[in-house]
Image (cartoon, rainbow, N blue to C red; front, side, top):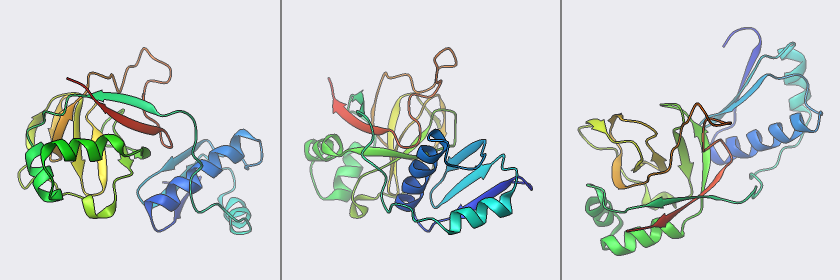
Length: 199
């Protein structure tokens, strides 16, 4: 990432979420040395635009950080038609019927761990580890925008048409990425998300 960046390896998504939230809080409070961008990922947090990376690394080493992200603000609620082509397969993997699979998904509170893949695509955590599902053996060449999918421990919503290998369980009409909106992304790291079944 260059000479003006630090990549902090934290060992897991929950720790990355917590560190990201705390660093954003410290920056907003004026307590964090100058950092242009704070970018979380699955097990890392990137600090970019750092004037003195060595000094910032020493400053970080001397601090205690929370082990979990704070609850945050009200959740974004995404209405979903649970009619995806992989819903039955996901339900079978979970050992439940389709109705119970939808109930599990809608009663889970998710949090955007990080964003990537495409503008507006958030990797959402919240499902218990035992409900992780594999990616499709053969990815689809075209996934419609608004498709709600599962892969591994993550839930995601495709913001635009793209190829994809996630298990599709439903679809939302919510606009995930809009360059005319500020901010353009509906979901940002740390955002709480709930899914609501609609017909």
